[in-house]
Amino acid sequence: MYKLEKTYSKQWSKNIKDILVAQQDKKDACNKGSWSPTEFQSKKNGRVYSTSLAIMTLEIYNYNLIK
Image (cartoon, rainbow, N blue to C red; front, side, top):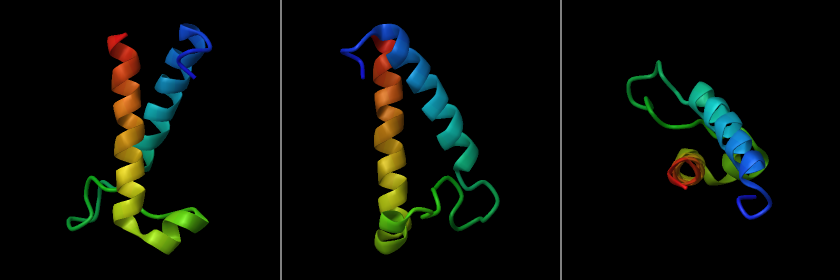
């Protein structure tokens, strides 16, 4: 995405950040800060898998901000 054009990359980064932050668990004390498994693959692999993918995606968001 970044190699296509910076405009697309920055817009994608902003949109994905907004989506992921909105979906992050904020209420449950034990799961606070993680992401619930919602898709088939995530449900199969669990909360740790979902949270790991979300964190890696947010890292891409931070990388695009730096560039």
